[in-house]
Image (cartoon, rainbow, N blue to C red; front, side, top):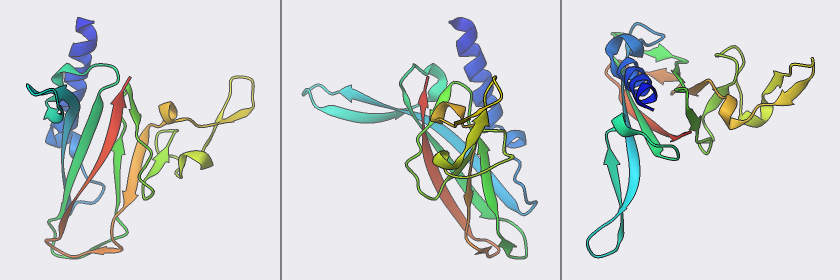
Length: 158
């Protein structure tokens, strides 16, 4: 169990360091943060949602991933796809209709019901949420210089 925690902390460190957040376009700056959302009972017996550091992730924990983006260049950026890898040991919440996913490392994209994977016996099967390796969003057709935004998505720890 301790090794699993160390691996998760290493993954978290890699996801939150600037080198892991290299944008696909030199003018786009991305900053990412991850939190665990838990429900706790307060002193009056009411359920309260809290957001905590993900350093102690448990199976079934709801995680919130936030990506802030900004065009730091002097020209508009057109057709920008914001792409993030899905951390191992997590399952992506697929409820966002604008999100596209990949189950093969980013080679093919679509909604989960449009993706097929090869089987060991030479056939194919539909991809499931646990197969997802990457997620992407097409940002506005044109992002003017200085424009910024934020998107968030949810993951579930396995």
